Image (cartoon, rainbow, N blue to C red):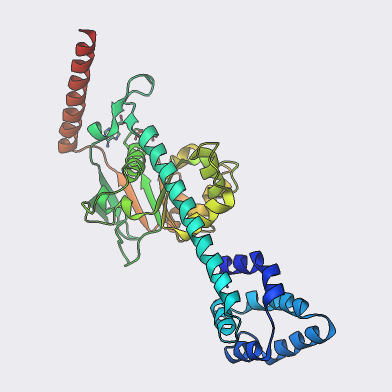
Length: 346
Ligand SMILES: Nc1ncnc2c1ncn2[C@@H]1O[C@H](COP(=O)(O)OP(=O)(O)OP(=O)(O)O)[C@@H](O)[C@H]1O
């Protein structure tokens, strides 16, 4: 039985103990559809005889129904409707739909919190980290990078663009564990920043024509160090990506992360891998194995973990075209900046 069905049974327990009659009609429907066996039936009838109807209902709701497989909840509602207890089924359905819209509201809240955070925090880059006061608009100066993709165990390679990051490679499956390696300063963090910032802008309007970053419901953008001392991804989201007055709880975050199509970006593995248990479990797929994880690192830090990654890329040095593009982007940004500074002085 799914978690939200169990939750529904829990939250409506006293109502059901009061309202449900384990009548012959209901028993017939429940045994017919396999929700309970004849043995269960006997046990329930004994409780009704020796204790009360409410005690039997409680036993059914706690000990039997939740353990009777994924279909059991729907079959139970159907049996209620067919045994003149439709009002109980209606109430449970209503509870489920109210709960779903509450969840949808929480998800939308989380999404817009993250998008506004990325738009605000990731809009600029500091080309000279030692001069924090000098920053440039990311969108203006970003140069599209080429990546070298290792295509198989023999180490064959092929050049791809950033648009191909999430494209299935050797199998039909969308890769769930991706690794981008590259030398210091080559642009790994800038790639991560650009992906999260792009997602923060909400939609590509289908222009990408590929499986782009906008195909994810959520993008969670971390530095590897954000996981140190955090027991789960949900805890890291709460501590590092959301404002402290945000009311979304870690269990709500956990539920959303499990339910949605999520991209988790983790930059700079090389800087914070020692004793980083949560990150280690993420890479191995011990947790959130069906979510997409993109990790960056300087070379040779993940030698004993390569097998966990379905797609492995390296960021290459700029080729001539990229060098020219970079200079062009920077010079036009500086000229515009200098012009507006001069106008300001006048
Ligand atoms: N694609 C790009 N477009 C424009 N500028 C870039 C790009 N990539 C990198 N840069 C410039 O190079 C600087 C260093 O890049 P970045 O911090 O992304 O490298 P890195 O590979 O993450 O380095 P490290 O391994 O030291 O963390 C950036 O601050 C930015 O100024």
